[in-house]
Amino acid sequence: MDVSEPASISSGIAQRYATAIFELSKESKALNALEKDVDALKDALADSAELRDLISSPVYSRDDVTRSVGALAAKMGLSQAVAGGLGLMAAKRRIFALPQVLDALRAMIADDKGEVTASVASAKALSKAQQTELTKVLKARVGKEIKLETSVDETLIGGLVIKVGSQMIDTSIRAQLAALKNSMKEVG
Image 1 (cartoon, rainbow, N blue to C red):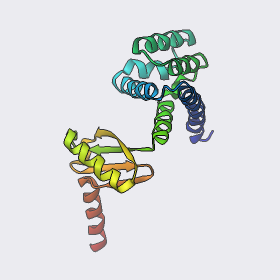
Image 2 (tube, helix red, strand yellow):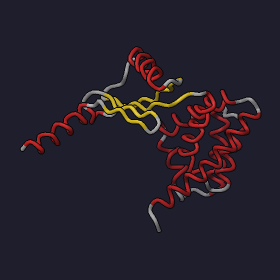
Image 3 (cartoon, one colour):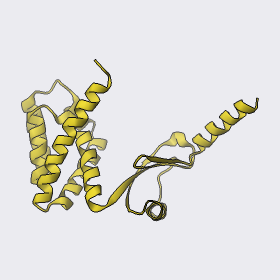
Image 4 (cartoon, one colour):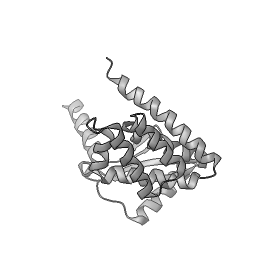
């Protein structure tokens, strides 16, 4: 079996669920609620090893997963479209695709708002002022509203790695050191 097959199957499943959830949310004029739900679920996945285990481990029964996902949706106060989508994913044993569904939903919401997501990795957490300045610079460069997704990658030493769509801007010290190392190889 081709290694990329499970990823592409997962991606196809995620796209179908995301499209259904997005369309239902748009029809019921609940895109703001959808955006809050997507952000809240992304944070929950990042913060909870239990939740990551629940969606990826085959040891839980379909009923257990369905019950847990229903309880989670109620506790988080998720919108009807998201709660229903998660319930259906759990019942059909497709909850493993949740991270890809959230990514697809985020992209659909951004596209609908004429916004683009910029992933920014930095050696240290960026201050609010730095985030605001970076958002301004990227907006001027890209010509669209920018939604920043920041993360800390201590291996960078310093500088930033910015991804906007398929474009990557790497100003990290790690990249500069790698370039220097390569140019020194050519000289010697």
